[in-house]
Image 1 (cartoon, helix red, strand yellow):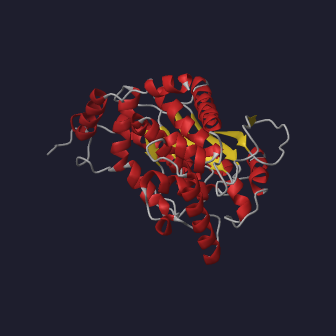
Image 2 (cartoon, one colour):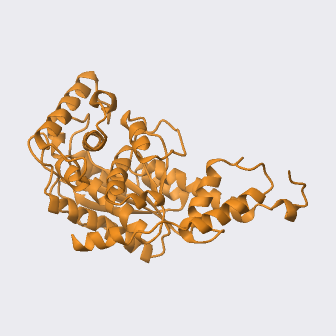
Image 3 (tube, one colour):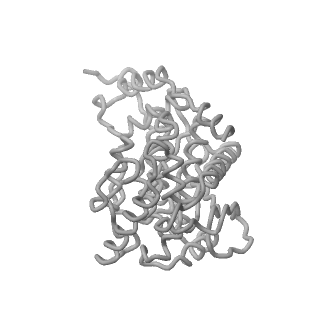
Amino acid sequence: MNELQKVLDGIAAPSAEWERKAQERLDQLTKPPGSLGVLEDIAVQLAGIQGTVFPEIKQKSVLVMAADHGIARAGVSAFPQEVTGQMVLNFLNGGAAINVLSRQAGARVVICDVGVASDLPDMEGLSQCRIRNGTANMAEGPAMSREEAIVAIKLGIGLAQAEIDSGANLLATGEMGIGNTTASTAILAACTGCDLAEITGRGTGLDDSGVNRKLELIRQSLQLNKPNPDDPLDVLSKVGGLEIAALAGVILGASQRQVPVVIDGYISSAAALIANRMQPLSLRYMMASHQSQEPGHVKMMAALGLKPMLQLNMRLGEGTGAVLAFNLVEAATAIIKEMATFDEAGVSGS
């Protein structure tokens, strides 16, 4: 825990001075003030993080954490648990949506087995860091121990910082784990007290009876485990997932190293919620990519105070929305650097 506390204590706020300078530059460009909307917000945020008016994106990586959930065996997903391991192989073979979109965005894909329940072969590109073969069924007891949650967070911190050491200065979160919308909904309810009926969604495509079963199992899990909303590690260990814990670590590790993280959808946002509760300053390094179709995601974004860049009716996960948002982040850096000011262009200002 001491190592984790050092990371939490080492997260500092981005520079307000460089944010101010970036805003001044944007207001001098050949456009009405604020007319590029979110692109301007991104440029200002990056300027504060990188400490320059002209932030640059040098290398992009999406970190995809894979793990299984014991609750999946109770029938909370339209897909069997074996799909988690099968999709990891698909990632490694380059055939998944995250591979296609990452190639388009020029981003590196990092795949990590944090807690897949099935056996996986040794393959190039797979970080095998399995903590256990999936979580326990949280409807029958805690999903994992507090110590396992900490190990997973520290794993995510290490993976993020290894990518940064290799040259990445923009990260994204991605995940794979059958049953993980159930864990994410439980985390949201535990942290915010949201009505379960409002935030429990269809996940991979459940019918109405499946959604009702999922809702009752989440309610049972919360009543049995009684996660403490004031203790994010307690919430994470009792009703969370190993991949969610690792992604919280990715966010915290990047924040300590002053590197921005693009948050994907619902599951990644659950990790962001945990990271934010552990260290509120980590929020300053997060960018929300897209609005998921999962009904709880609106509540998740409200709890974090983040506004997604994109509305594409997506609900796949894997980091797909986050990688699409990489293009907007790079556009924001181009705008502040390459657009002319009124003086430079010889255009009359207001």
